[in-house]
Length: 587
Image (cartoon, rainbow, N blue to C red; front, side, top):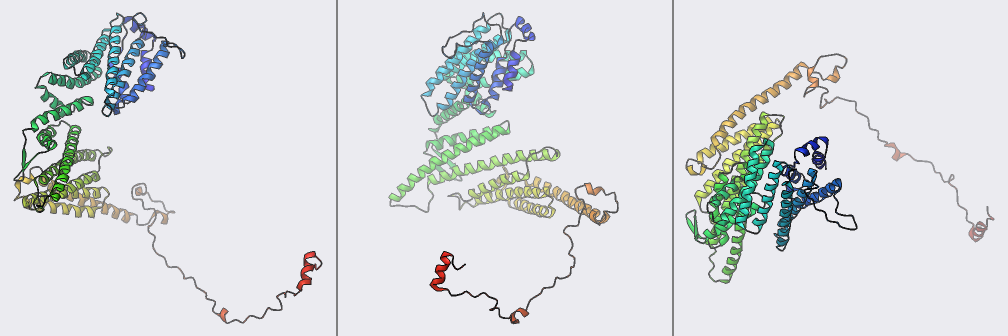
């Protein structure tokens, strides 16, 4: 609400605004819609919330301008014409109508994944939004509107028109509209300040994937390479990202027909499942995309995409394994000792999944280590802790433990040695960060023992790696870890000596606690420090006199006098006494 009032305050007809009206009405179209979208739901993809905001904004604008459509009993339609265009809020009114229709269309786009019939309603709302934008462009053609607003209105109309043609798969018309929109925003970017230029540049980046996608569908085969490059840089989010993934899958499906087998660990395995073929064909492209990722966020997204595809492929192979097991039960020849081709393919896909998990966690660990060093240099900045890295290396070790139990690789001694070597390397790094977590809480002896364990693991890796030189290519450098541990050991010993020395100096200078010399004044600066000597804790034991215990042993041998004469005897009255007692005669 505060942001709305600020925007409406900017558009209110003050004296300053009247001078602006004489020079021409102005409306920051792109800036207004971007701010509104970010503040009202589109940051989280909530188009329904943004549509509700547009409706409320329209009602407030109509009430403020006195431009109501009749009353509660009767609807009277009104049109905004050039003659009544005396305030920029009339332009904002038409803009909000277009935004409301567009947000409803995007909401239906999300719902159309499960309800295909909503696509017709989606197209109707997109056409409605484009119609409102054309109305806005015609209003801006008036001599009362400044040149910048005219250009922005033309770009906005071209964008919505392109979206309509894009949904209708009219690729040529959509490409023409998007190119027109891109050209206008590029000109505006070069003509205004840096703050506005950033907004125009972002809109150009949003439009570019749509243009390349249209070019590909028209017949430009070079556009697929541009789309793949945009995928690496994280461009083309939302609706365009889904279309791009579908396009890549379609291209791989065409290539999958030529793939018949895959070779791994010296064994050729036929691949008959289409989903496995598509995944294995795109594996090299996905790994190359991860290697070329420009930032950590894009790399993490690509890792998650690859893992999701791998899990789906493994599930498809498992379904085939179930049907193969049923066929084996029915058949008489049951080869239980030999691993079938389908089981070996399942082991290969599981190997890919586990190796990708290890690489992803290692990448995250490198990022956290860099942040850990930055926060170590700046003590006031709060950042990651060594415990976060310990959790990542736990997951890595768990993945390596699953690798050693893959079916069909139990007798592959080279593979088992490689896995054990990798396990030692990651154990060393995990142990190193456990030691650092102990250093933070000043447990010097525990940290020193753990550093020794790190050196033990590292030396064991160096001795075993001589026979497996190729296995250390993808692993972290153990020599750097040894150098870092050696430096940490010396600094740890120095910190432990300083801590013990400071405690000894404090106790030597002021052996008595404060509570024992309250009558004598001493200027002791340690009383306001971290280790004030206030009382002796725990207190020393002091001897105290023992309290005697008394036992009454004579009570058992005392003979008490009889008390029968003191006890009142109850008289025997019989029936007569009972009757007298009832009627009160005996009292």
